[in-house]
Image (cartoon, rainbow, N blue to C red; front, side, top):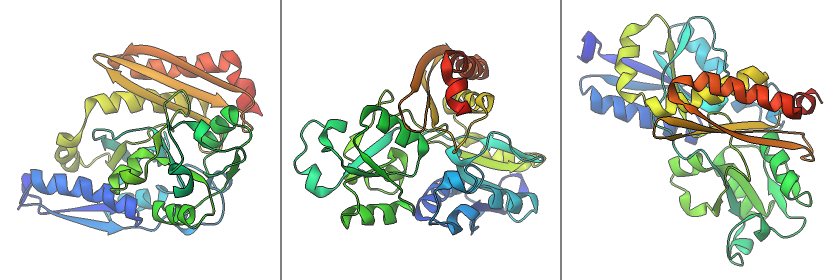
Length: 315
């Protein structure tokens, strides 16, 4: 029998290879912490998993990969759900809470070149892409930032899990892909990574690289079990980012991003808002103390609005 007299914990997860890798990472930590606790993973199919041929921003954006897991939680079919935090809306359903945010992986985006280009590349940057190169990404945020720097690139839709996208690259459907570094690392595919894009080239999505452990708000027992997995620095960083997103009222349908880095007792928040065609782009960086993460996020959103972001997003 485990801690608090509990002998079983059920974790809800999407069924993709990456989602299961993330969930198993959490499950293994819990098994190590509580040897008498049986930790079971329950796979839940989400709407985002079922829709494979339509860009996400056209079918609902945030919530596509989380709502079904939250319904299972609320119905008592699982004790917690493991999410990629970038997929979790800033407003959680009544009765649920973000019980723990583990230490974050690398939040940057990655450029993955086709072998034919990687063999010729020297110092990696966007300059290693030839004029008119076909780059696969379904993210409006990535598209806008790439178009701002390289309007000549052919940015094409690519859906499917990481395995599928890499296979399409290897088949010659694309010259390059843009994927999250964290996903490649969690799947053990860092050897495919060509270049980690600096924040000033491609500012990440809010919460990218972080996991969110969601539970029922009244389940104090599970909340206590999860506290050893909580990372205070990551929590502060994503709180600033999510407050920025919530203040702007944006999501997957808007080209915006934000990432906060922890430097001692301070947070350094970088945020971007862009037009879909990349012709207009605003990027700002601000610094604030950990304990004022939400204030930092709100002030960043208001600053970008005043600087022209309101007009860009209004388009």
